[in-house]
Length: 444
Ligand SMILES: Cc1ncc(COP(=O)(O)O)c(C=O)c1O
Image (cartoon, rainbow, N blue to C red):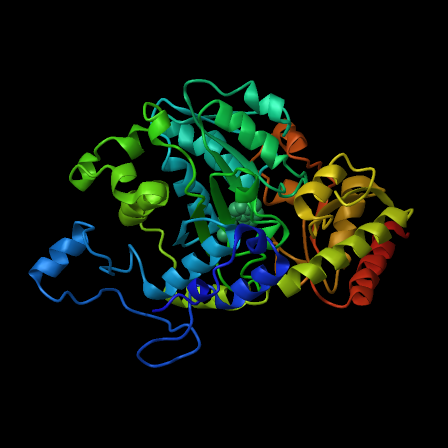
């Protein structure tokens, strides 16, 4: 398959431009199928690929020649998705996986091992918090959570045992915006990579690699896929972290791997060492594979992500302003308000475009919040975000239920917090639904 992006590969300056991004979301990774001339990306619903000979099979397994072996390791449809998201994020390569959660899991496992630590901001998606706080410690990898997302608070926790710093560009559901450049500087000064979950803004609003991130992960299930039909995740490698310069901290990348007949990832893969290890070790042995049909559906979603994000962002701004002006609402957390502590970071990283994920609380506390939630008509009551549809969730009882009250507070959640993912419907209908639900919640 020819890579359509190669024909239009842009300079760094252009790469950041919206024009380039709008084209890449549609074309990157695929021009047309060389044998059939199919213009849509073919769904290669195959498990395996024929070898020309025994020698060819052995060379593929020795990673001496390029090609497909078995779809748990790679698949041509998934490869288009991987190329496209890598290009959109400005990375060298990517690995698609079955869910965003698998992406987070593999992304941190690939640089750590028993006895080592991770350092993370406290504002995280609930299941990511569970993974870092409760699951990985059982395998000997502990996470130190900082008091806040301030770079100095993270810096204070990094030491010789640290394998990576982790943050969400925009926290779910806190809506905090991380100071990526400053956090990357703190991590790099200590010789560790920065892993960023960029699910909420998408590369259409910010590309963390431009600010020093070494690895970017996504739940493709959300805004990139965009239609609430398909689970998926992806890990993007910036290809810039100097693993060999910090070889003692990262022996898994710089020393021979006994499980892969002595392969040294940095020697074999060069700048793609990290993503090569993610694929050869974690995808191969743990097998959280994205189906080719899902890859196809996610590619369909990505083709329109720039358009959808524009509308999501604008609708969310109108919703935030409506809620803030309404006397029935006690508080609104929206980083796009000029008095938000995150407003300067919204200008710097998101080009002034605050995300469409916002939280608020109704006067009357938890009970009024429940009445509001039950009265919604256009908004769907569920646990998801980034669908074209408007969605509402009560994090304390669902997505962040496993956290303690203190952990919830640090993550930006109270018992009364309601989270909205503002969709792309007509803004008048979105506001009318919120208005009638507020009336139902607060009257009588
Ligand atoms: C920021 C973030 N990262 C990761 C995930 C996990 O994604 P998935 O549901 O695709 O496993 C989610 C899910 O809500 C999320 O919000």
